[in-house]
Image (cartoon, rainbow, N blue to C red; front, top):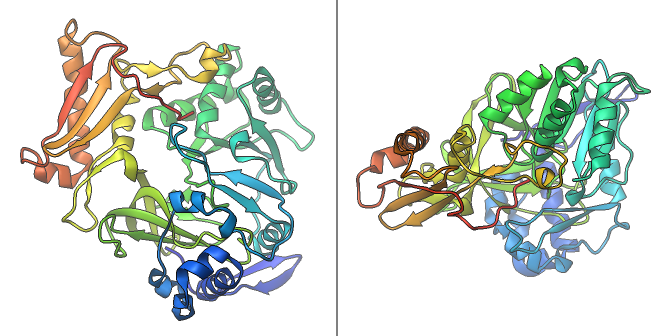
Length: 444
C-alpha cells in the first residue's frame, strides 16, 4: 500500500521532482524525534534505524487513547500558528476527541505538490461537517464549500446550490458525508425537488460507510454514480473507491498505511487486520501521527491492475467486532459493520430517529440508524436486534430476519463458518420487541 519510487507533478508548466516515500518517511521520523517531545521521550534512539517505510515497524504504535492523553507533548516545537484544527470525534461521547492542528506550512506543502484534479464539466460542492471544522485556506478552483449542520438554513442553502445554476455553472459533483447526504436527499424529495433533475452525476461520500440499500437509493434518486470513500479526520488524505478492483486506494497527500494482525501485530499481505497510519513530512508538521493505531479493521484486496498496488476495504471498528486468535489475517467472527449492512435493508428492524427527523427537517423515519448490539461471549458471538414489532406476535417475519442475518454473517466470515457449532463459534441471534435496547447511538 504505497510506493517508494519518485513521483513528478506538473505545476505552472514546470516539472517538480518529489521525494520518494522512503525519503519522506526518513524525514518524518527524524523531525518527529527532534521536534516532538512525546516521540523524543518514547522512542529514545530507536528512530535512527528507521530510514525507509520497511523499517517503520521498529517504532511502537500510537493509540488514540495515548494521543488524547499526550496531545500537548505531541505538538511539534517548531511550527507556525495554527491554520485550523480537526477533531477525530468520539464513540458514544465517552472519549475525549483528538484535536489535530494544521499549519499554513502544511497547507502550502499540500498545494505545492498536489497532482492536478481531473477536469469536470462543472463545480464540485463539498459539504463539510462542522464537527471537524472548516479549513482556513480557500477551496481550489471549481470547488464550492459549505458547512453541514442540523439547521433549516443548511438544508435551504444546499437545495439552492444544487437546484439552479451558480456563478461557476451547475453543480455536477458532490463530496459529502454519508450522514448528510441521506437526510438532504430525503428533504429534496419531500419538498418536491427531484435530485435527478439537477446536474449532479457523481456523489462521493465520506465518514461512515453507506450500506448497499442507501447506496442504491441515492444512485437512483440522483441518477448519479455513488462512490464510497474512506477517510479519517486525523488525516487529510482520503482513500477513493476504485472502479477497477472495487477496493480503496489512498490519494493525496501521501501517507504510509500498514495492515497488521490484530493480535500478533505482524504485517499482513492478505486477509483482514488493523489499519495503522503515518502522516508524512512536510504535509504533516504540527502534530505528526507516526504508526497511529486507527482502531479500524480493513480487508486487503488483490493487486489492482490500474493502481499497481493492493487496495483495502473497511470491515468495521475493532472495538465493535468479535475476534478470535489463531489464524493470522482471519481474526473476524462478527463485524458490527456487516450486521448493520444487512439490517439496514430490512424494514422490520427498529431505528433510532435521525436528529433531522426529530427537528422536523425531514419527515421520513428511515434515516435513523438500526438498533442492534453485538456481544463477545466465550461460547460464541451474540447479536441482539430490536424489531418494530413483537417477534412473538409475528414469528415468521422475525424468523426471516434472523435466518437472513445468520446467513449473511456466515458468508462474510470464513472463520465464523469454520467454527460454527463449536464451543467458541456458536452464533446466536436474539430478536427483541420495540424499546428493548436502550444504549446510546451517535452515528449521524
